Length: 406
Ligand code: AMP
Image (cartoon, helix red, strand yellow):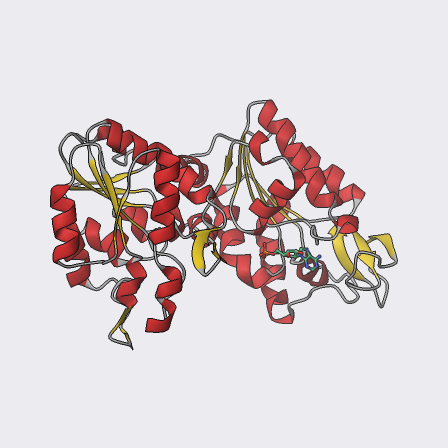
């Protein structure tokens, strides 16, 4: 990959600004905020440890939740995160309760090689004296330049915000000599970027989930890049309607029918649609259901792909060398309608074992593969919901564009 990574940097004695994704859930225990789930902190440890063990002086920062008023600030302080990070790193972490000013500057100047500090939630900058100013979220140039002035080099390891141009990613990068990807960011670029830019073929994309309107740009982009695009989930019924099939009470977007017809006509056999559905008489796990081939009976709705679709999709996946999956094949939250999604997850494990690169592109599909217990058997599970969607749409992500080339 052509982007600079943390391993390319000379770190010893350097003040290393590090944008991490510590946007973690908090919970209140005895009136104090505590980290409720530290997965994201654990995930960032390799990059942080690398910088510290190579003599860098790490200055960490992240956003945490959304700040819309002064009242939001106390419950969204980074302090509990700093505590948990210290526990996980097994070394002291200085917490600076400020995002700018002399206290922060002094603390950074006092850092020694291998030491780490974290400053306050970057989104504190979005509200100043009670006024919503979005200095962080709207990338105020002065703020990015100020933060850049605090360090020598910049490591961005926060893929989840890479699709946004914020002061704490693009703003700093525009004002500092070198910006490098951390290990998490590097992995996302390697897998998601590699799949859409330079996939080993056959490249098969599987798109599911609720709505055509949410995923249409992805389908269009991947129809250009992939060898086959499988469409399942709720959105498949708008395509079925476009083919003239009866879809009962299934999810349906009338204003997307023409577009679906167009895609079917243009894509030919590149677009692979379900050939049957598990149709239910209500949106509930205990619904009365049957397998519908073609038309769905009045009063019934398609909640999962049927067994023949599973076989068809498996045959398309069989010789794939790269697979990107975004969105479930049905209402996987209900066990009776999770079979299609489960079967695809299991098939992906098989093709991974045969040497294919398999990538799950964030959001609900990530939840699905975790629920199915197959997450650790696939090549890559993307962590960024919005960011991975925009990557698959073929958009340029400002946070990634701002990383220096090697
Ligand atoms: P998305 O966020 O677009 O990936 O959509 C995920 C959601 O789509 C999940 O909550 C699924 O339950 C839902 N979904 C998938 N298939 C269907 C379907 N056939 N009917 C209704 N909802 C569905």
